[in-house]
Amino acid sequence: MKGKIGCPTQIVTVFGRLKNLLRGETKPLSAKAKFRLKVFDWHTHESPKYSANGKPDAKRMCRHFGLPRSTFYRWKKRFDKTSPASLENKSTAPKKRRGPSYDCGRASLGYAVGN
Image (cartoon, rainbow, N blue to C red; front, side):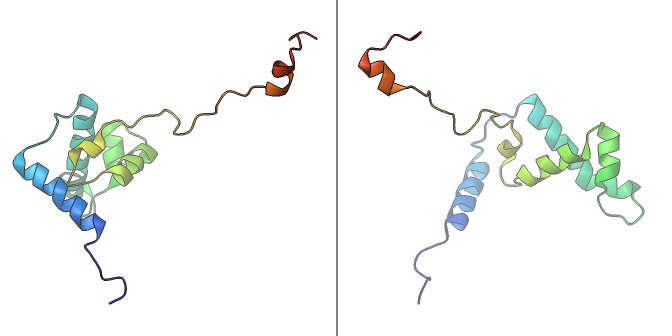
């Protein structure tokens, strides 16, 4: 019975998101997110029509939309099918910022800054 207590968190969070989608509780997508969704839709439905083996072709899709493949694969890694909001822009601010560095020893002794 070791490790079998409770329900995995992943299952609970996926069902929570699906429940919100079924209720229609989604925020409207931005124009950039709509474009990314259009890119993924074309990749899954239209690009197999033009490929030789009938599978989605990322190279052809990127050429069609004028995107670098690295950008497409970054979006693909981040994309979650159950949450269209995953296509929204992410913050580019650093997660950890450096704090100010003070020289407390000299300042507390009363030394002048220039000396």
